[in-house]
Each structure stands twice: as structure tokens, then as C-alpha cells.
Length: 159
Image (cartoon, rainbow, N blue to C red; front, side, top):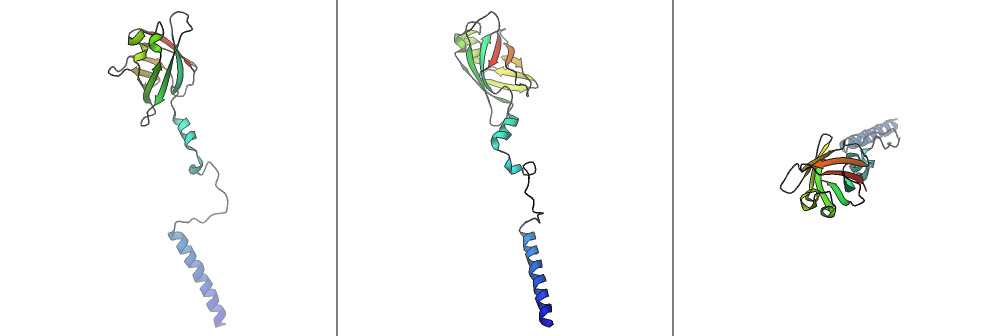
């Protein structure tokens, strides 16, 4: 009888020891169910998280003069900053060659952007706020209208 009692006592001690070790290592007692995607944040991909935070202006556009019908355009690309998704840099290509976009003193000077509410403020190297256009942060419209401080009006169409 004494032997059976010691066997039960040792089983209880081993079980208690395992629970203590599990508690010290941070293990949770599970109900055996598999976590769903919504309860496990580690399942989200970086691309999906980036897409949720990306500003609607980011991407490639074609820029046309707003006055007069023309098929001539230039390319303009908005890129978000690595540190602030609501500002970044702008690359223009051949905008100085399109009549109506201000030659070398027009929209070809644009090299930066910053969001102020629903307005995108355009800037040059040494000149902030040289132009603007309205585009809400979550609006993926295909066409926007804007102007520069030198009264150059333009239309941008998503490329």
C-alpha cells in the first residue's frame, strides 16, 4: 500500500514540475485549436501592410497641359519617403519639352511632394510650394487637375 501511494505522489510531483517549467518558459495552455489569420498578426505580409499605408499619389502619371488640346505629355513619378509615407520625391521625364508645361522653369523643376490634408504640395530644390493639386489620401482617381504658382495649369492621368 505504501508503494502505491508513493507512485501517485511521484506522478503528481512530475506533473506539477512540468506545469512549473511550462509557466517559466512562457508556454500557454492551449485548447488545441489553430489560430486564425485575424488573431495571428505574424501572418500578415509586409507587402499587404505597405499597401494599406501607401498614399494615393504614389505611382506613375502622365502630365498634360490643361489649356488646349494636345497629345504631348511627359512622365512624372511620385515616390514615398522611407521615413514619412505622406511626403517624398518626384521624378519628371521630358516635361521641359512639352509646350504648355513651362519649359525648364515649369513643372520640370518639381522634385518633391508633401501631403497637407487632401492637398499635395509640390516643391523644387530650393523653392517650396511651387504648385499643388487636390487628391484625398484614399482616392485612387485616374485624373487630377493642378497648377503651379507661375499659373501653369496641368492635368495628370495615371499611367
